[in-house]
Structure formats: C-alpha cells, structure tokens
Image (cartoon, rainbow over all chains, first blue to last red; front, side, top):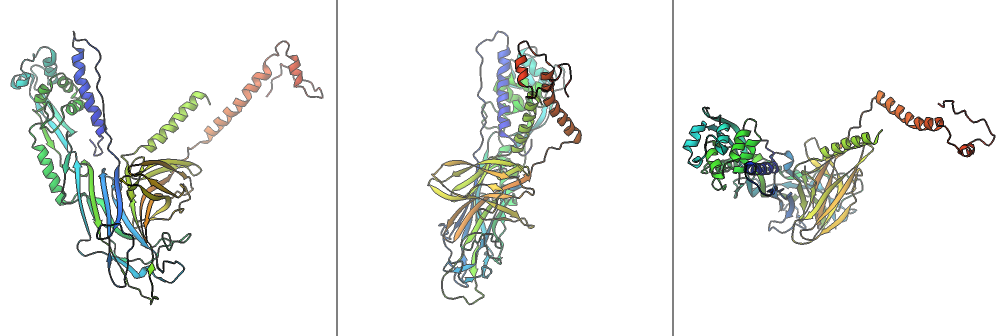
Amino acid sequence: MSSHRSRGVVAALAAGGLLAAAAPALAEPGISGSPSSAVVTTSIGQASSRQLALLDLAGAPLVNLALRPGVPAPFRVQVTDTGVNQLTEATSGFTVNSTLNNLYLGGNSSAAFIPSGDVTVSFPASGAQNAVGSLVALPRTVLSGDLPACDDLLSTITELAGLSLLSGAGLQLCNAVGGLGGTGLTVPEIELLTSTEQTLSSLTDVPFTLGGQESGPYTLADYVNGIGAQSGGAAGTPRKLLTGAPNISAGLQTQLDALATAVQNQAAVVSPDGSGAQLALGDVIGTLLTTAGMEALGNALAGLTPAQASAVLNQLDAVVEPLGLGDITSVAGLYNSFPVLTANPTTDPAQGEYSGTLTVTLVQP
Amino acid sequence: MSVGFRRVLATIVLSSFALIGTGGAASAAGVGGVEVTPGSGSSFKVSVSSNGTATEHFTVRNIGSQPATVRLYAAAADKSDGGSWSIGAAGSSPWIDFPDRQVTLAGGESAALSFTAVGQEKPRDAAIVIEQGNGTVVQRAATLIYVSKAPMIPISTPVLIAVALIAVLGLAVPLISRRGAPAPPGRGDEDDDFRLADAEPTPRHDQALV
C-alpha cells in the first residue's frame, strides 16, 4: 500500500467485507426476508490550515517596529499549522521571507530616507526558533503467517467447535486452507492500516526541520509594497525569516518508535468488537477478499461469526511497520522565529522619524 | 462529423480536463485568520493553451471567531536560482484575471471565488495573495499558481486533408441531392421563381451539377 493511502478506499473495502459477511448468510437455503442494506461511509478530513502572524515579544500583533540607531529590535514570526498532512509532499513545507522599504522621513516616499541597506536582520545565536506541536498517526501493519491444516484448525480453536468439516461454514473454511488432508495455508505478507489513529502530544520535535534564518542587510530597497511602492518598482532583497521542511528528527523517531511498539503490544491481531486489537476484522476480511489467492479464505471468514473469524486470524502474525512521514495524518504545530532588526545609518540623516514598510510573506509552494 | 462522434470527442476532452484536475487533500494558507484553500493540494496547477483561458475555483474562509477583513489579489511569483520565491505586488500578474479586492468575512464564514488564467506564449507563475497590513508591517500569505502551457492537439496533414474533404462533401451532398430530385407536380411555378430574370435556359434535370 502506497504512502498516500486512501482511507476512503479502506472504508470501502471494510464495507465490502461487512457486506460480504452478510451475503453468505442470505444465500443459505431456507433463509428469506427483505433485502438488507449497509451504509457505506467515508470521511474526508477538513482542509489543513497554515497561518502566518507577526507578533511582538509579548505576543500581540506587530503594528510598528520602532528602530533606534544601533538598538536591536526583536519581534516574532509565528506559523501555526492545523491538520497539516501529506508530509511526504515537498509542498507541505513553507518559507517566510521579508523585504523592506527605505525608511522615509515622516513616511513620505518623496522625502529624504535612510537606505534599507542600513537595516540588517539577524537572529539570536541560541533560540533562533522554537516549536511545539502534536501529531496523529495511523500505523501500518503487515499480516502474514501460516494457518494449520483443516482438521488441526477446527480441533485446536475452541471457537470453531461445532463446525462440521463436511458442510456449511466449516467445509468452506476447510477448503480455504487446503481441504481435508491438506497442509494448511500460507498467508503472504499483506499490509493494512491499523484500526485506530494514535495521537502523540508534546513532541520532542515537530515533523518539520525549521531553519532558513537569513541574516544580513536589506541591500536593495523594496519598491513593490508598502510606503515605498512605485509603479513598476523592483522587489527588494528578500531575507528569509523562517522555513519549514518536512522531516523526522532522531528524537521524534524515538517517540514514533515507542508509539509503534505500543500498538504492536496490543493483545490481539483482531477481535470481535475491535477492542484491544491492532486491526479491524472487517478491514482484514475485505483485504483478503481482494488479495489474489486469498479470496477463498476471505469468503470463508465472512461466513463465520466475528468470534470465530477473529480466532482464526489471530493464528497469524501482525508486525507494525516503523512510522514515517507518510503515516502522519495530521500535525498541529506552532513554529516561532525571532528576527532582530537593527538600523545603523551610514549617512547623517536629519532629525525626525523615518518609516518604511516591512513586508513579510508566507509562501505555500 | 456525426453527432455520435462529436459526443465521443467531447467526452475524451472532458475526461482529459478531469484528469488534469485530480489532486490531493486541500491545504490552506493565510493571515489574520483568513485563508485561501485551493480545490485540492496546497497550490494551484493550471494548464492553459497560449490562446486560451482556464478558470480555477477556490475558497476563502475565516477560521477565526471574529470578523476579519483582508486584501486579496493576484501577483507575479518568480523563483530565484536559489529556490526562493519573490512575490510581486497587486497587478503584477496581468495573465491572471483576478481583480484586487477587500474581503470581509464573519467568523467561520467562507466565500467561493475564482480566477482566470489567460494563456501566454511563455507561461509565468503567479500567486493568490492574502494581505493584511498593520501600520508599517504588512503580512501576506501567497498560494502559488503554477502555470503550464497546454499542449495543442497535433493535426497531421492527412488528417487535415480528410477533414477538408468531409467539409466539402458535407456542403456538396445536399446540393447534389436537391438538384437531382425530380420536381414534384405543381411545383413548376416555384422553380420558375429561381430563374434569372433574363430567362436563361434552366439546367436540364438529367445534367449532373458539380
């Protein structure tokens, strides 16, 4: 199964499994009644969201940044993620860059100015950025193993007591595992999604590598936006303030590995009601029905009670795969960068207040 | 071209556009609690022929609980050799028809909008920009529009000749049919109406017209 799994497909397969479970019962001779129906549902998650905010150090929206010559003026760039997913796509990352006008006397772009090149952006040596977040992941598991021969299967699994080798559901199961006198059935490795999303809070690291802090002067003034905008004006020197690229750090991988282990340690592969099990019974049966060579087993299991089918499937092994970017279905995060602007006029500007527009742009590729 | 064939061709074309439009889950970017959500994915991918147009629909929504006003416009987007994107000002992308506007949304409110990409010989990327300015600080979120040139359907010379012949036959067959049919009784007067005023001899009905 590809990393871009469609839970819609899984839901459809699960529903197929449930419907298939109903079908044999209806097909039994002597059973009649009105047609039954099942509601097939699949849920599409809300669109993910990424917001940019410029804040002062107190966390209030940044309106003006007063620069006194030689005095560093810090502020905060914050990106907030909600429900971000598809982290294997390069486009799930982001860039925040900035440009600056010349600083004009009285905010008048026709007046004298302090060149934007006299203003530099820098970042603290330590604490240039920080991030907090949580994520939701849906682990994958690989189901495989050997089912014993027919008579062993029926004699050792107590839930199958009462099934006949010669008729009905017992015969169908017997035929599916190789028939009387057969050697059993080897189930090849089948990858499935586990049944329950797992939430990881208080991440050691968010699943993004933050960086991109680009120190230096705003060499070329911005004439595209703000106070200094001119028709046909050129863009100013961009200075990156924050970037985020999807990545799993060693610390986060340790947390994800612990999560996978917790899922692995669940008592059963499947269970009649899904509790305490890695996989949903319907998902497994549905997958078997659409796996080459396993269709007969799927059909046979669909004709058993949930307890019986679970007992058979619990003879198999289910190994949880290591979690990666593709298994993360949702990220909520708060990413901060702390740029510092410092103005050091190289000319001898006249006394007064000089203003220019700092334009900060979040680019979503 | 038969109606049936036209229907088949239309189906093929529409299917192609449907394939181009297929994408992943939508992802939004914004400022001030307002964001732009493409139909799918985190950006717009538009394919338009050099003399055509293509319209993309998207949603603007206020994810906050309070009313918010933002400025919305299309702008040029240029990528440097280093991979950085430079986003222009409002009006810098005339190949994207999307008038500069202010949008005010109540908390939780959404609005459906669209832009039209106008085909160019050399496609250029652009962005839909949400902007909110506070004093001398302006914050923007740019959702990129990747513009590519739609391939023209290649038409080979034999096909062109075939199409031309079909067109000629399409015009000629009705004409031949009409001239060759014998005049029904009592219709001679109608035929006379089509004679030239100088009473030039009318064509014999057994003469083929080409």
